[in-house]
Length: 264
Length: 277
Image (tube, rainbow over all chains, first blue to last red; front, side):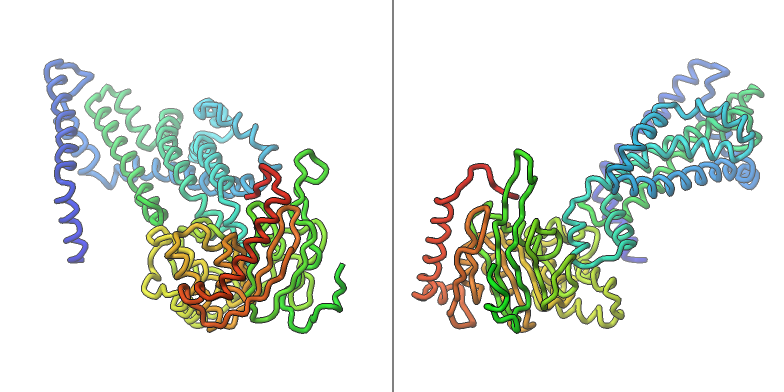
């Protein structure tokens, strides 16, 4: 623990200028926001202090309720859709990446699906799947799978053939060839796909909650707007920004851990 | 062609019989790489194969290791014709940076094939430790390949092959991409290990000095379509020494003989652009 603390201190010291510049940039943005909104005196553009106050009062002081009504429903949909799509696209991606023929058959289909903006599916899914979680999870999964799938295929195809020769020389079994050779070798590309997909997942989560929803983060923003509560509307947008940042940060942490063998 | 009876089959661990290989047969790019190669390697022997560039050394190694089927001819180990990579043989590739798994630490790279061999943990640990000691890499177990120099990475690849404990080690120009000093120390390390662990080695190189310095026997290949031009016995006492041995008249004479053969092969058939990767 002491070591970690000392490490953190040396890290902070080494990057002090960097950290200060970043904090200054954030401060400058909030400062400009405050200055502009204070001058404008507009109902639609509240000053940052009132927005942060609303974040504190409406979201954080009654976290239990916010969690139940907004965070959890949204995160559940997002993680289910993202996880499901990620799992399936990696499995299918490895199969396509390893078989040129299979790839030739299905790749045009994937490219076509990718060309469709995912929100276009929303009305259809509402009819087919109802207005519950299933419809939202499927929408997120549909939007998320093409980048992961295409990146996985690309990653698997660009594996050096010598790594397969090596596995063959050492009689590595079929299963371990997939789990211990193909997946780690394709992991950098797979993670690139996951990062793109995470942003898409957050977008689709919000969109799906703007239609036919009764809870979630997107729903709460819509509700604030319908009730002309513009401060709360802005507070909801800020909260969504934080949620997206945290999700991307977590993914990046996982990536750094999994890909720690790479040159930084 | 040569009947199996004329060679003494009792001691031959590995035999190649009349190997032919043609790339792109029937197309305009048709290239005959192997034009009938036969040789045998006895148990415990160190044999090197040397030949002009583009003579199909890599093709030969892929056929001999079982990674590739020759167009015709056969390779047998312990008297059995092989159809895939035999478990009692392993191949050390030229390009260590591509054959090591960069996501595995040094010890895990060496251990990787042992898990599939179904060995118990304690046995695996012992083998990994011994193999790394044999190549003088004790203390580097937890490093990633990228943290090591080229010569050290190739030693990891050799340790991985040793820990697998095959009777036969095939080495495909393993030292072609390291500098001269590193190469000399890797050669001596290999001789040390070969003697200590009683391996049989088939070592492919394009370096004439290396082929003579290491081997009991040097097979000289002609240019493509290649065949064995000469099978030269190296009667230089061991242990050998990089400076002393290379200054002896026997060594100088043998290397000149091999060099002459390769030059004549290069002059006789030097198809431009026939370089084979």
